[in-house]
Image (tube, rainbow, N blue to C red; front, side):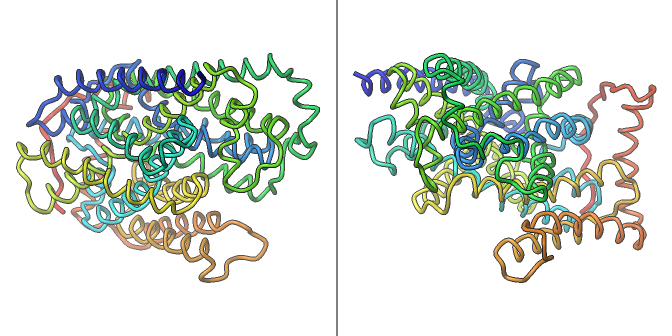
Length: 505
C-alpha cells in the first residue's frame, strides 16, 4: 500500500510538471535566444522569488545538510547560516548591477558581463572555465540524488541507473522546450512543494515523537552551538556560503531575467528568509534523526530523512518526502542544465563561431540534451557524496564572487588583477585541497588562504598596473550605468533598454 501510494503521488507530481513544461514550450520562441535563455527578461515577482528559492533548495538541502547535521549537530546551522546574508548581499551588490547592465547592453551570462567590464578575452575565458568547471560536477549530484530518490520510492525495484535516467528525461523535456520560462514556471510548483512539504514533515515528527523526547535521545555533543566544528571551520564555511549564492550562473541568470527593479527588491528580501527557513528545518530533522535512526555512518547519513520517515511516518508522509526530494533535485538540475547550455551556446559557439541568431535556440536545445547525457554518465560513476561535491563547488564559486564584486564596485580593478587573482586562487585551492602542496599550519581548510590570496593579488595588481584605454572605456560604460541608477541619492532606479552593445575583445 505504501509503495503504491508513493508511486501514485510521484506520478501526479511528474505529470503536472510535464504539463507546465508543455505550456511553457508553447510560449517560448524558437528563433529568439533572449526569449529562450532569459524569458525575454520578464520574470515577475512571484515567479522570480520561487525560481531563485527553488534553485537554492537543491538535493544538498534534502540530503547533504541533514546528513551533516546528523553527524555534527546544531553547529551545522551556524556553519551554513551565512548563506541567508549572502543571498541578500549578493542580490543587491551583484545581482542588481548585473541586471542593470543586462537591461542596458543585453548581457546574459557572467563571462559575457565580466569580459565586457575589462574589455578582455582573458577575463571571459577565466570566468567561463570556472563557471563550467564547478557547475557540471554540481549538476551531476542532482542526477545522483534523482537516482537515489527513485530507488527509495520503489524500494529497490527500479535500479539507480534507471532512476537517474527518469529524472534527467523529465527535466530535459521542459528545459529543452521551455528554456528559462519552463524552468521558472515549474519552479513555482517546486518551491511550494518544498516549503510546505518541509514544514509539514517537521510538524509531524515533532508532534508524533515529542520534541522533548527526541532531544533527550540526541547525543549531547550534537546539541551545542558549535557542534563538532572548530572556529576556523566556522569562519571558512561562513565565508564560502556568504559568497556563493548569487555567483552561481543558474541563479545570476534568473536575477538578470527579472522584469523590474521592484521585483528584484522583493526577491532580495524573500530569498534569504526562505533559504534560511528551509536550511534550518533540514538541519533540525537531521539532528532529530541522530536520535530516531541512530548508527548511520558515512554516505548512509545522507538518507537519514528517508529512513526516519520509513520507520515512523504513515505512507502519505513518506510519499510527500519523496516528492519534496524530487522537487529539490529538479529545481536545481533544470537551472544548471539550462545554464551550461547557455554558456556553451552564447559564450563558446556564438562568440567564437558567429552562430546566427535563428540557430541559437536550436543549438541551445540540443546542448541541453548533450549536457544531460554527459551528466547522466557522470552520475553513474558516482564520483563522491553529495555534500563533498557541493561544498567544493561552493568554495570555487566563492573565489569568483569576490573577483566579480571588486569588478562591479571598484573602478581601479583591472583585467590583470581579476584574471591573475581568480586564476591563482583557484589553482591554489586545488593544490591545497588535494594535498598536492603543503599549506599554512594550523589552518585545516584550503579555502581561507586561497580567498586571501585571491583578494590580495586582485588589489595589489590593480593598484600596480594601469588600465589600458580600452579597459578605461569599458569601465566608464559600466559605471555610467551605475551612476544613472544611483544618482538620485542612491535610490535604485529603472534603466531604459537601449541597443545591445558589445565590447571589443
